[in-house]
Amino acid sequence: MDPEEPQPGTERSLGLLASVRQFAATIVAVAYTRIELITTEVEEELQRSVIILLWSILALFFGALSVLMVAVTLLVIFWDEHRTLVATLITFAFVSITVVMAFLARGYLKSKPRFMAASLEELKRDRAALERRR
Image (cartoon, rainbow, N blue to C red; front, side):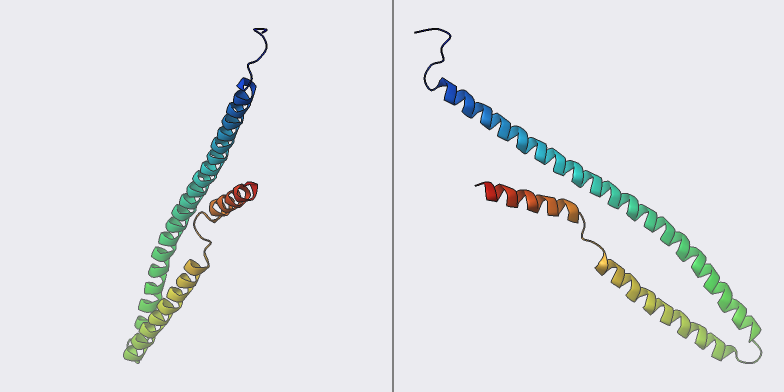
């Protein structure tokens, strides 16, 4: 027997081992890609949330100051004649605006895309592709 000639069954086991290694490398590459995607989505969501939070805090602060100044101005203007009526109308306006804003915020939260939706969709496609290969 020639020493350079492969033993029977050795060639097959090397091919099987190479296939297993290639399959493992593919799984690792897919997992790495998905983890990168998840990481990117988390970073984007955090940045978006921080920016929205900062702008919201500033808008609320200056909005509250503006509304307070308008209310005080109206009370000063109508102090002698109809201060109770004006105070009641201002209170009603504040409550109405609060209710409308609460409903708008609730609607925004419900319409917001699901957290990490793109990553979940990719994982579903990967699972479906693996199931088709079986």
